[in-house]
Length: 112
Length: 113
Image 1 (spheres, rainbow over the protein chains, first blue to last red):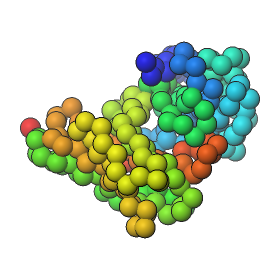
Image 2: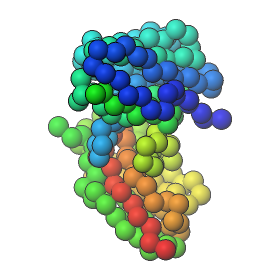
Image 3: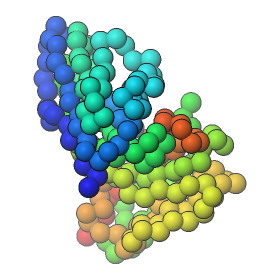
Image 4: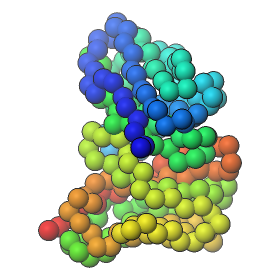
């Protein structure tokens, strides 16, 4: 089983809203990732968690705030986003860092 | 600086024939390479990988070839099926403990029935 789940599938929010994206895996993976993908572009790494600790932040604006409450869950808290933040947000996990990453289906975010 | 390049944005192949997708990289520290397949509005699905100690890895209809001296890898799909129509990304990482996966820009493969 290589399933990573993400909720919600779609999210529309205004620039003053606060919302959260959720990612879950039950494969015992200890590394989890957030990526952002714009249309016709490759996924871009945002954050990496290893053993529930943030190990990489790719200079992401503070309006994106990741959280890893336990080894199976990864959240991305969103606040005061801009329309250009509209994208597909992908979560991935791997057994350990540098192992094969398995992706969730993504959350399609639209910021109005 | 695009360290992983897929120079063909699109490719059309007749059903039953071989599809060959190409990927070039510039960073000589990359030692683990992966191919992902992506349908619209879905997450990438892992297909096959290869480490730099090998030059070929095969899994069913999918074979990945690695030419380290040319910094080139390719994905062969044979025979091609209509369900293979998708965008294919190659990705690379550098070294044990390196979490960062660098993706190419993708190739849209269309299988013609």
